[in-house]
Each structure stands twice: as C-alpha cells, then as structure tokens.
Length: 358
Ligand code: PEP
Ligand code: MN
Image (cartoon, rainbow, N blue to C red):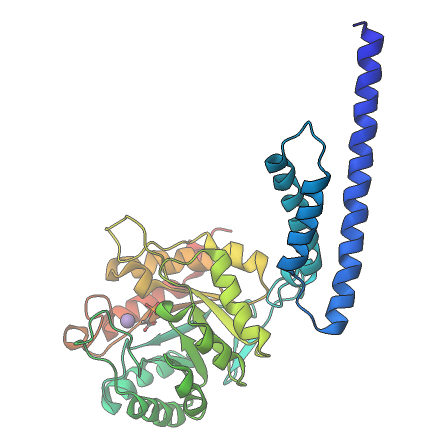
C-alpha cells in the first residue's frame, strides 16, 4: 500500500471520528430535551425498560464485525453520558458548592460570626455532667472574651455501658448556662426525633462523626432554622462529607459549619489522623465555614496546640477543643481534655500571631 493510500484511509477514519463525535453530541442534546420533557411530566429520568428496548434494537441490528458485547459496552457508556448530562445541572452545582455560591457563607451564632475571616473558637467539655461543671467552663470561656461553648448532652459511645449523656437534662443545663453567661451553645443531637426539642435549648446542632451519613437526621436538621455543625465521618471521603452537607442544605437550611475531626487510618500514634488538607479542599469546593476539632482528631493533649496552629495557618475558620474543670474524673474523653491551666496556655499561644509566617 502506498503512502497516499494510507493517508486516504486515515482521512476517512478522521471523518468517521468526527461524524461519531457529532452524532454522540446530537444524541446528548436529544437526551437533554427528553429530560426536560420528563421533568415537566414529573417522571423519573432513568428508564431501565427504555434502555433495554434500545439495547435490544442495537443487538438485533448489529452486523459486525464488532461483537455485540463490546458494542453494548460502548452504548452503555453513551447512555450513561446522556443520563449524567440530564442530571448534570444538579450534580455539577450542589447547593453547598462554590460554583453555586462564590461568596463565603458567614454564620452568626449569638453575635459570633463564623467564617468572617477571624478565627472562631469553640471550647467546652466533652459531655455535660452537671450544671456546676458546665458553668465553671463557661466562666473561663467568657473571661477570655469568647462567645461559644460546647458540651454533649447525648453521647454516642463505642460501648453501650459507657456514660451516654444526660439527654434533655443536659440540654436544659446548657440553656441555663448559655443564658447566664451570654454564650452560644453547640451540642450534638443523635436522633431526628430530638431535633425539634433541641432547637429550644441550643444555638448550634452538632451532627457527630458517627452520624454523618444518618440521612434522616441530616434531613431533620435541614428542616429547622438553626445552624448545624457537621462533623466528618470516621471513614468518610471528602465527597461523602460534602454530600452529607448537601442533604442538610437540600432541605432549606444552609447554615452549615463543616468540621474536620480526623479520619481513621492505620496510624496508631494519634486517635485519628487529622486530614489537614481537607480544610483548603472544603474551602475551595464549598462556600461553608470549616472548623477543625483538634481534640478528637489527635486524642493527645500535647498535639492540641500544634494542630490548632496548623488548622488556622491552612485557612480553617475556627478550632474546637475540649476543656474540663477536672479531666481526670471526666465521664468521657478524660485523656485529652484540657484543664483550665492547660486551656490558658493553649489559648494565649494560639492567639499569638508570631507563628503565622504567611
Ligand atoms: C464530640 O464532639 O463530642 C464528638 C463525639 O466528636 P466526634 O463525633 O467527632 O467523634
Ligand atoms: Mn469528646
């Protein structure tokens, strides 16, 4: 075969490629049109019966030389492209994404603006144990000019025999302390049934790592007018984390704070592995404020300060850490909560701007 012949065949191939390209795009346009009609009719976009009919027609019309399994494979991909395009409007622009809303979401919790460029701090005990215990922490927090307090009334524990929290009693303690000290309180809610009650007592609903994909809880939190602090699941990817936030926002509540709290890896030196790069990724991908919980991500008191510095240096909007008047007798997480002296040292260090070189 001469070179000229080869070139001619190649040119023919190029033409076919371009024809295929045009046809695939034309098909995609048609699929989009069908999608719009279906949306008006309120019918499901994906129709497996219709897909089967199309595949059957293709199979019966295939004259080769390509075998039908390969042909079907290619067409399935083309079908999928069309479907993705139909759903693209939803998929490409999640409500929580920056594509949808380029400007930062700032959340106002009792005057504390989370996500406004000034770091926010959330301190408080792991669990609410008594009025006196919470009030003593509130006093220290308030004296530092801080506005937010945390404390768990419902504690999702690994063992059912461990302290499970005081429940509504704990919420009442938090409310009393919040009112007395003028603080905003953050507390975890573990059941969708408790959301309605909780909104009367707390200022931010926390959804814990173990419940990040409790979709009914996410939907219930999304249906109320109360900020939500959503923690990343123990083994959740960033994509799953973002989608969990989308569950909340899809119900109408866009006041969501994302909280990186470490993920489970093979590393045993820390309780979890703080995925510090998740912070800028979440900031890029979403418009939501991002916090870092240094207590649960490290499980080590000696790492609270360096990880908190890292969090702020990499662009986190805030830091959460646990403080207890007497950690050694705490009913949960006694190993890593700070006592008041350690808290003083931690807070004065984290406020020094000298370590930030950027
Ligand atoms: C908590 O913040 O009290 C808590 C239990 O954290 P996590 O859900 O991140 O484990
Ligand atoms: Mn804890």
